Image (tube, rainbow, N blue to C red; front, side, top):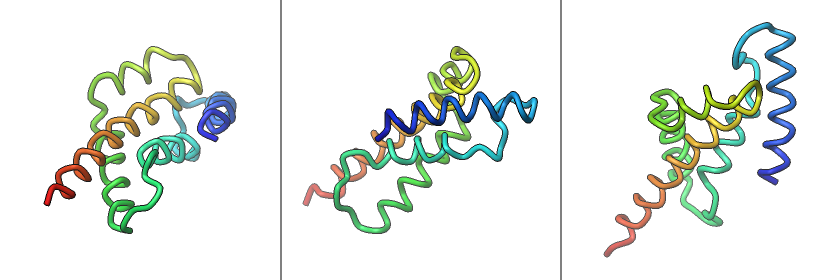
Length: 107
């Protein structure tokens, strides 16, 4: 499913950049969906507050854009860069969420 979202999102983001004549237009949100789904990857069952933590972590990394998030955004052209920067932010958030889960389950 993530591969399909990546393909459709790359096409849609590229098209939106052409139509709106703007890099990563704010009206395109499929990249956010892609990043959020990556963030909760491997969590098949979780307390509801994990979703809030996942959202906050993803937004934190998406806004801050530490390396290689900014690199991915600039390295890949058009919609692929739009999608991959949120994908990398999702992986950062995924790692943090798993660390949080690990430390909270150490009783």
